[in-house]
Image 1 (cartoon, rainbow, N blue to C red):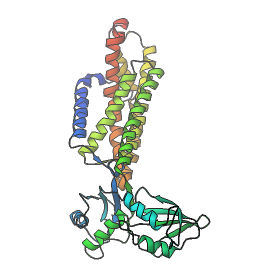
Image 2: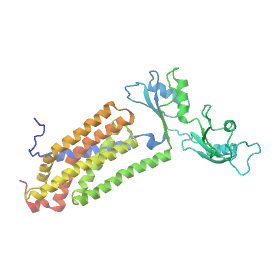
Image 3: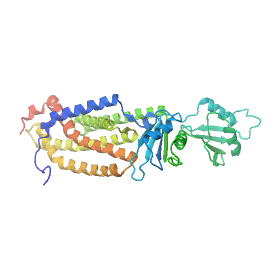
Image 4: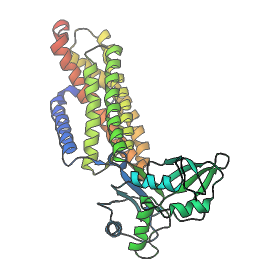
Length: 394
């Protein structure tokens, strides 16, 4: 027996009052959580350095945090990652970013003879010196074939940088152009060294699985761009719905999308989840899915408006929703079942992406029924006076 028998007309609009209260409460709570305590921003937005480490032995988050703090890192954030292959899989983040200060850069360039009047004892004369934004590499172009041993010896005396250990450092990247890369000890390397010295012997691996960094300024730019992308998408969707149908449909559709995005972020904050670029990608996907579901229902409402005369707009909404309900349930449940597989068996960012989409899909179905259409009905009743023209409900 079907949960929702096909052909029956359901009175969805009967529950629009309680649904409006629930939606308003959810949005208010989400706004409050955005202000206090605020979202837990990922490195993408907040800036900092993060490494992903799979420890060889059982290790607690407090021990990892203590080992890193002893080396001078401030407020390290240690997050356990659910990994069926390794129970000691952690993501470790600090606020610091590797940078090379201007005085240190001048000292490096002096050692590399980057000047019109190089030192008389200069064995390697650089014509170009570039620094990686993360402060973990120096790229140098020389006038002639460089002496790698001399470069290493010169840079080893510069205070403020530390060359990464290894026989292949510096490394020739392009022999024809005399280009050389010099690898420096990054914050990720320092964090790994801190854990090797501060944890029981044999616990920390030799290398991190992944190391990422981003500066605070770049993180702020990414955050602003993410907010702007969501806002622009809502504006264009409103214009599309207004052109595709008519003006009375556009505000409800856009309000439903804004409701989905805001409520999803609020729920993620309540669950203690991180907000990063992956979250923004998921929210944009949610907006696309939700507007598709809303447009399908809107299209059915418009068809029924042409076929049914003398009925209220509220009744048209109930008929249209009842006719598209099976499609909505089948489409949404199929997508959610796939996402549940990613959430259960996925790891890291894939799990967070799947969770965000699951929350957004459920909210998208709800908002299409109880946010977009009730607002459309209110606009039609108050601004277009359709009910007065066509009569009462059947």
